Image (cartoon, rainbow, N blue to C red; front, side):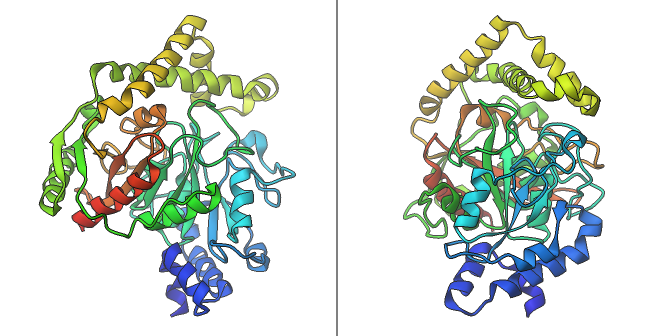
Length: 421
């Protein structure tokens, strides 16, 4: 029995711990045993100290005794924070980042630091997809998504600048939740893009996402397992990135539309108005310009430690004229203001989480084509797993809502997932 405890969702584990039928130490041991079995293949961790994880004494709170993976762009005062870069190997901050501090305050136990791509942008780490280790787990929240999906820990932090929560969750068959921008405080994160970087969570269920994010953000995000008394008004949105969709994603969107309509949803096709296509150009300008400014110290003192791929993007960011950057920020402002009208009459938009299955190989973490628009708009998104593609790898569908309507988006995401089960 104890060997299977690693399969528990966080919400179920919390219920059992509160009822006294599960000891936090037993849950930790089950997760550590799973890690010992699978880590040599998956490589989810940037830092792991089993003895320290066992010795941690969880405080009271809703996350009491739940093991949690921390993406290695979030500082931890008792563990190295390397940010996926050789420049910062072995660096030990003096304090926890805000997300980690609030995790511990809520009783969560940090089990280790999870692999991120270089500064959560380029140059993937060694993490493999648990569904097929010959394929990428996605990025940049590689270790968090792979670890949750493979049973190493029930909850993990991710961060998203383009598609770094939603895409790896979809590729690995986990649930990913990118909240409304700034829902979870970023203090103590290695920030690259001040206008885009968003802290979110990866878990095994939608309810787990609401449970975890609510605990660290100090918000009541509801219980998504409580079924609404009606179906959603849903817009099937291919988005300006539809040309990137693989055949399995074409079929997935058709299957989702039919299934949720059968379950009681009101379904219509809804595309974003033409001005939203400008985000395709604006997003990389803002992201790379801000990232280059954020890495001022590294560029000045350790340019040799920056990968060729990232350096290329930083140079692109620095080459942008003041007018080009201002115009890109203006696109962000105009589309963010226009998005509520684009969703008029709808509860949610449904759009792909990724172009298709996880690509083969570990050299590339996949295309964020179906994510960067929603990140730019600062709106909440949830990716739920919905079966598999032609190679047996997971597929995901993304539920998007208006800024600040996170509780509703989480509830509708669970409704959509249930309609597809």
